[in-house]
Length: 315
Ligand SMILES: Nc1nc2c(ncn2[C@@H]2O[C@H](COP(=O)(O)OP(=O)(O)OP(=O)(O)O)[C@@H](O)[C@H]2O)c(=O)[nH]1
Ligand SMILES: [Zn+2]
Image (tube, rainbow, N blue to C red; front, side):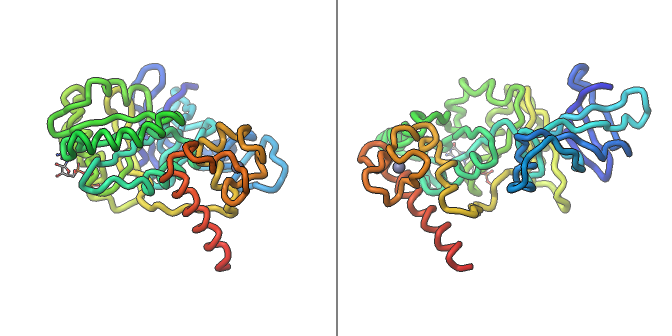
């Protein structure tokens, strides 16, 4: 039995990369595949069996792109035997075990929106993936405007997010990005026109991806199915379609939102109400102290909280 990762699924067949040899293998799922062990902390399990007591459970899932699997190398069909536990999974694109979402945001054209950023971050945190913010088109703003933007974004550095600033046209800011993709599965996200494909193109000379593959890599091909694919890129893998195109926040309870604003999680002990606090109306809540949170970030939290509350009241 050998270990591999699925990079493509085509009509019941799978393309795998063998983890030891790096060979590309074509495989079928085997009849035995039905039983897959998922452990307690699998997000998949949590969603489906929220209220029941979680035990090591056996259930049927089908292989998908990004999955780590074992396959039988002695059989010519290379049947997939087992799918290993997923650390996370996305549905659009349909990829498991994503390491990072590269959030592509333009400094200008389209206008930088902090609300959009905070919404993206909630969704990415909810999916248990690491976001990396790439601010593109820094050549389109004045130095003063860029400094102002950077100053605000320092807050996001402070709470633990990585940010890079680039001009993809003149390839400025790319020297530190050489290892960005190495050994990772990446999904790009960002508004239309934010500069996703130009960014990948600017990385291309070092990373040897052909132009054709880039347009394919960003879903410019004729995708009629929901199939997805991972491309070798920069020593790692990149999903063929951008993620999080729909920015719909789904929450059962408004109190769940605070889990995905990471500063609440990190500094929870500083709020004297601890877990009982939604950091909204509670007088004396630490996070309402001026200067603790970036103003726009706290306001966006309040707005999103209200939105969830109102959605719920409709039903
Ligand atoms: N000046 C400048 N223009 C840029 C930069 N990055 C991208 N652009 C331009 O912005 C426009 C949109 O860039 P794309 O790379 O096509 O954006 P995208 O995110 O792939 O867009 P969609 O495919 O619609 O999702 C193009 O005209 C690019 O030339 C940059 O760093 N500086
Ligand atoms: Zn509080």
